[in-house]
Every structure is written in C-alpha cells, then in structure tokens.
Length: 109
Image 1 (tube, one colour):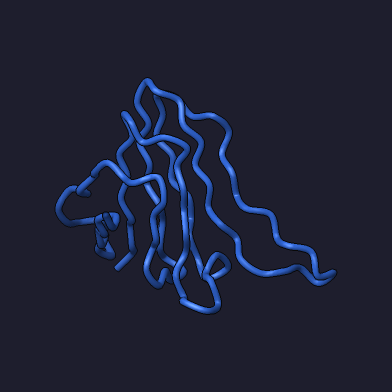
Image 2 (cartoon, rainbow, N blue to C red):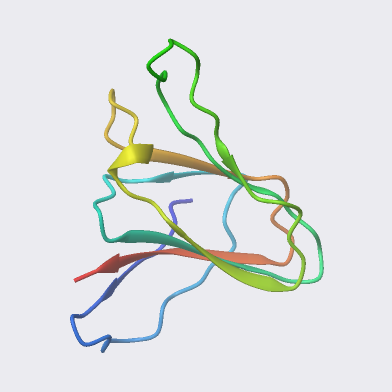
C-alpha cells in the first residue's frame, strides 16, 4: 500500500490529511524539498527508519535516520532530496510494526 499524499496549500488551507495504516516498508515517490512524512503512533511502540542511500566522502555507507522507540506520539520528518535513491528518485521508509500506527506524506504546494 502506498502512503496517501496530502498537498498543503500556500496558506495552509485544504482538506484534512488522510492518515492510513502503513505497511512495514513504504516508498515515498519523488520527494522534493517540501515533502514530509507524518506518523501518528498509538499505544504500541514502534521504530521508524528513513533509509539514507549512498556513501559519504570516505566511501562509508551513510547511516539511516532511525527514531527511538515511539509510543503515543506524533512525529513529522522532512524527507528532502538528500534521502532520494539515485537509481529511482524515491525514498524508502520502514516501521518495525504498524499496529496502532497511522501515516501519510505531506507536500507543500
């Protein structure tokens, strides 16, 4: 299942974001500099990982962005071009478990 994408207008106007239960592995298609991942976690703890592709200047794999264990909280991550896979232009994210978790992609208009 692909995450629902919600576009926020210049003045913040628009319909409410459509949150849905994510799968344990999601792809954010072609993010730009105004893309964010919104995750709402209920009472069941989960860990969210944003995959960072590529190597640093020393040829070492860049570390993924990994959250601490999240419970009963809402988080927003900026997903910009730095997270894009050069081969696909997309970004991969993962959740350790998805019970009591809702998510969507927010894009600035």
